Image (cartoon, rainbow, N blue to C red):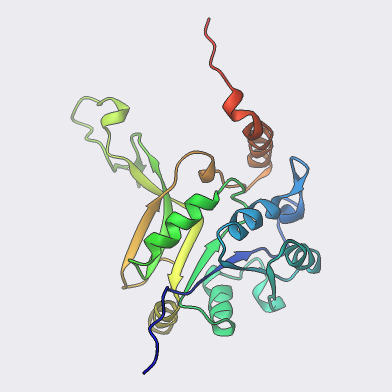
Length: 236
């Protein structure tokens, strides 16, 4: 009789291709004196899960190995500006053995060990789990109100139903379901027709570095975080 598994097998994958149009060499650019990708690597390794870094860049792969990750060499065909998350994740799932893959973006340097572990635990209940952040303010889509009524008085912001926006810092997929969705729809990123959940992030973990101004904001945060507990508000 085969022995039942004591836990669900999960791995973490950090995607980090060499090319970046908006910020040159973004993943290895120094943030408060450390390579940007090292923040996500450190938080991921602290979870105790197996961590892969998926890249076409030898510098990034060596850095990953030196920090204790498993380097995964991505094929050059999956590293263009037109390569999709579906494509390189599909390739990764084909070549590793795990029940679930948690993807953590190196552009979200302030994600924490506890947030990753809580996300991993929640992942047990879904085929796809997507991190989101709340926008608790009036929102409009295609010129139409999403969470307010134009014919009624504007309520206090704390009473507005928040709109959940993709944070993308953390994404997770059950590998077998991901493959099924790829077969059925040619994509799997959003969960397809399967059981999809949403995990709300707050605070610094929602910071995502896409452009130069984002990097400057992140630099300020990175230098403040070590002294955050010492900060005291003052008033006029």
